[in-house]
Image (cartoon, rainbow, N blue to C red; front, side, top):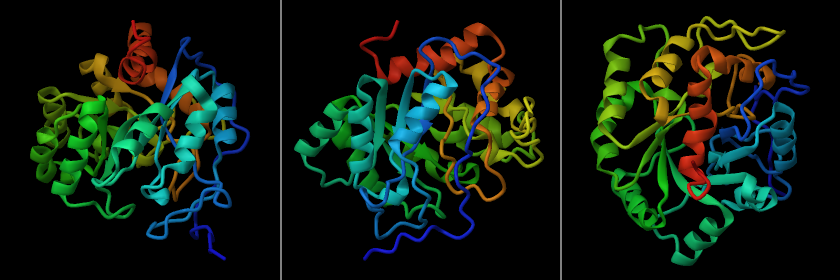
Length: 305
């Protein structure tokens, strides 16, 4: 029998999230979330670096409805490797209310790519965060990008801010649009006007890039946490996210990152994460772009205004 013992210290998702005070605009998209298993039905990959608590499609869709989200973009979890079965199952259940970002290998068949596309997949994810996954050689990833380009897919990039100087030339060479997870994980103890974040913003400006202003709970150092009714959470992250939204209003996305994998410090209340949005998107026009117009243009272009 396969052992799916949960990684020690793994925090379960927040149960009983609050009802947000901030009302999401009609059609809002959670552009970054996951499903884990259930492992009994969708086993985790043998090469995984962590074993999570199950977080099913039913749990995700219940949260979607509770928060007032209209649609989800479900990102393949590294613990499932290149077996996208749990992702596809969730997409087929959601129908047109979800799109997906998969993990594929360069030898994936044309038939499999078409099956994924028909299920709602519109991108692949490249993970360069070494504690979560072993990144494939860049030539392998470039081959994957070439395979998915004819489908109109994009590549989602997850990396640490300190690694961008070594990776940006490779990123810029990829023949597809790019989406960057969690603002490239900036060090929020530094200035948002400093050279490190300025380099990131220059990379965004110079390339076909969208940026997720997601995961303040993962980036924060001083908080306060999105718990116990705190509606001014993660103040140290706000200046970075606000700068992205202000400078790239038509290229910013938002997501919950539910169920918040690999957090060690605390598990945020997802209702309070919604209440965090007006601190980074400060006008109704920016909120509309962040939550509706930009994700619809990327994932549902046939419906986008």
